[in-house]
Length: 407
Ligand SMILES: [Zn+2]
Image (cartoon, rainbow, N blue to C red; front, side):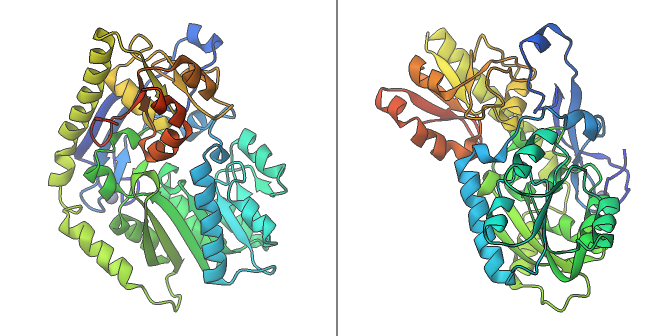
């Protein structure tokens, strides 16, 4: 296979998680009597542009089905993050009634509704029908398509070129990152700004976050590599912020290559840090498999010990990252009988691969397990607050990443 960005032949392995079904392919009770499709889940790194990427197997169409169950509005901390962003960017760019904002992967309108409220014209791009419908119900116009160069040019041609194009947690999920980036270039007005948020591969490596690897997540990005991809499309990164979201993300600010805005010191400093940590050399990538296996083995040992001791364990958060961990570890309902999740669309379904049933959060409160394993460790604080009544009654909380921790 060749690098999705620069075309160089890939020879450097990063992570092999075996085979797994798409992590958002939640199953109904009927699905449990049918065969389930597994794809290899392996990552390699390009030694030319240092793009960490999944091997090519599944097509985007099969991964993002109309049934896709993730609704951004289900997470209160994510909603607050979106509202803070809109306030910040409106004031930084001075957006108003004459401006145009496009959000790629606008999901259920969790973010654009803040622009609607501020009276700023906006447009969502969202291929998933169920979430697009939810956004339209909030008064947000939505194009139900995948974003790329063709749509970017079409939007510009229709007079819908944007002063701001934003993409939160979509950049790492697009199969053709070059085409997507050319789409940003095409849809961006002169003097316009692009902001993208994505998990920072430097933090993934630092904190053993192998469970953020899944098929739908095609790229694992550094500032260095995103800078290269932008440059190839005629864009430039002029600022960057480090965020706490998803275990450590970047928010990059992009503009047309010839824009007069100066590149900030933050960009230079972070490029220097990535270089110092060895992100542009093979060693750091070669060491990662053993770290992932240790985390997986410790999580499995915890579940086995709890079972032998007659303790009850439940999981909270039917997140994609939980599916990666559970499927890598081979966990089934005998070790983890149920998982609770606040998202109504996931309830009464089953986790792909492990077939662990997903229940309403009231169930975990009613059943009072000895341990609650919080699968989405990035919202562990929020979950512990929601389940404070359980902690008062002696339930203990467990997270597996970056290392097994019992709280
Ligand atoms: Zn490359």
